[in-house]
Image (cartoon, rainbow over all chains, first blue to last red; front, side, top):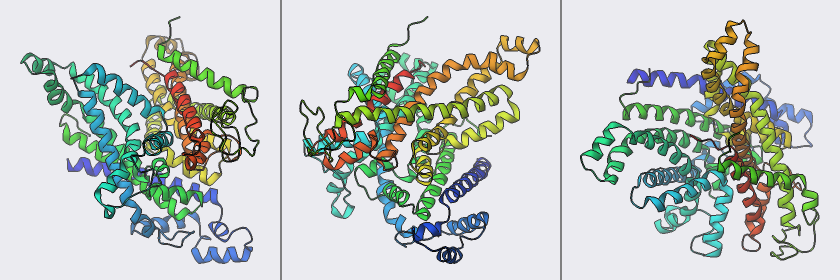
Length: 312
Length: 260
């Protein structure tokens, strides 16, 4: 087991390095001199050259990359160009809202998709509803879904706050009230995609012999569904949750913007729009690392949950 | 000729309607999409079905014209994804061995990456022009196409007619182009409809975040964004273009429907 983990980790490292090199060189190649960008249009060439020396932009790209990587590994991502704030200081307070949104979204998506796809009582009513909800999740972009929900529940009905973020200190009620619409928005797409995977596996499992045995010994349909089919069909969903969580490391970009949530996603978007590259380079790299790690964890979880599978 | 699945017919109808809007936009739209007027935030009426926006432009006309940008980006990205993904998939699937190993390594590397994040970074760097957006989205979507083509090519490689083609001395290129590709083509066409849906989804999200085609070109994602602040004044500023995006994506998604 341990050797599998180590081997997988070692295989993940070259991937991370390759992508980070691509990203770094692409950004610098496209940006031109960061110094010129910082100084604006009326900068003299001498001033640009001076700043380039000061920040080390005149060094060859691979030296800059290694330098950046070395510092990043020690937790130093440099300073923001627009606010001169340390990137880590800008990132830390924004972590909580994003993590909370991502985790709650995943939790809602997973439990709802698995529960409503396994339910055997009232199938005639539940199935069509699940299908419609899945279709909405896949075809309606997050910004449209978020705004529609906001329009219905906040503008028309006036029962939920339109946007913003209430910290825990504002009281748990307020905090959760502000979270309802964003979490639903994030969850919709994953509800659909987890459901697709789960139902396919569910159908395959329900044809197995041991399910027939469970029925034959007189278990009720819902006992068969929840106790026997569910545990044997949930694995592919776990993998999906893993890779989806990794992708959400950059924050739920669109949803955070719709509801003006002060998370990583809004920081990332603002950094991109103002070309504040130390900030978005850091977020981009962290996302890539998270994606690789989460995929790895999902694979390992798969093995732990099902001893029949061997990774080697 | 087998009757297509009803879902595909629904998709075809919606896509045809949207395409008709895009082509005939100047004649269909009651007003010019970029002409401003003094009638700001007009609520829906018989003159302006969806009202007017913050600059007094007719929202309906802008939604109709917006179909052009979305469809061009969607179709363009699908072509780019096909041009990169199909050759890589064919080569990996048919040639196998080292070529396949390298192809799969690249496919797996890119397929796991968050598409929106990648697209955002590249577009923020290169500038939000129509051609940049098309190339970037095609680049983000190609691994899916390649993986599908590879799987198909691998199974077709084992078929008797390919063996026969090899036995009569057919070269690799000839076999791929005359025997493999025609059998993969249909599946690729279906998959590309899904790529169009994905590209419209992503590009409208990009422009919602402020990285779409620059104004005043009417563009659905950007329109939704500018309407967010005026939801209480004229909700159709956001809901009409947002609905158009959702309907178009739904259409292409249905068009790409495959029975499992």
